[in-house]
Amino acid sequence: DTDSNYQPCLEKIIAAINSKTRAIVTVSPNNPTGAVYEKKILEKINNLCREKEIYHISDEAYEYFIYGNTKHFSPASISDSYDYTISLYSLSKAYGFASWRIGYMVIPKHLSLSVKKAQDTYLICPTRIAQEAAISALEIGVNYAKKYLNNIEYVRDKIYSELREINDICTAPLTMGAFYFLVKLNTNLSGLEISEKLISKYKIAVIPGETFGMNDSCYLRIGYGSLNNEMADIGTKRLIKGLKEIII
Image (cartoon, rainbow, N blue to C red; front, side):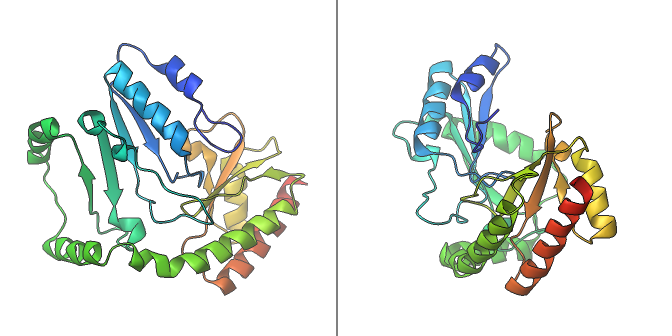
């Protein structure tokens, strides 16, 4: 559970912990919301994991996709958190390696043997060429992703501006990371129904909130990471037109 800006609610996390809990997972920057979790919240969650003697699994696949003055914070940077903090990274987002199926993780040393045992049972692995390309990408580092951020931020701002014009039928907090909006619609229709209508009549593909287990209201995830300015203009007009005609 989160607040209206999709920031985690610590009290609800605490209430959900029981004797079977082995880890708390945070995803920041977040998919599907685009939220970047505040440093103080991540510190509290990490400290909670320390107190409960469970792991903090931090998914940071979108670490380089940050806008404005927002800062990404990695829980593994907290002093003395190494023994219970696991950090996950993917080259699919920052380096355009989608479908190459390659990433890496940083784990406590005492988990190495267990991870190797699990890995030994896998029948697949990244190809040699994917691994070589990944090494080169990591050597280039964050600068590869940075050259795309200005355009992505421009597209984000444009879509957000258009969504605000129809705030009577939808709610969408300004996202500070990743490349998604999670829009809440004021309708009795389901996210799946809206998605089907948008793609069949308006040629706009979105992901219904039900995909992410959000069944209490109507949500849509809007992705904009691969849109250039022209496509963003066309797509946004279709999206807004479709939402108005479907909901109103």
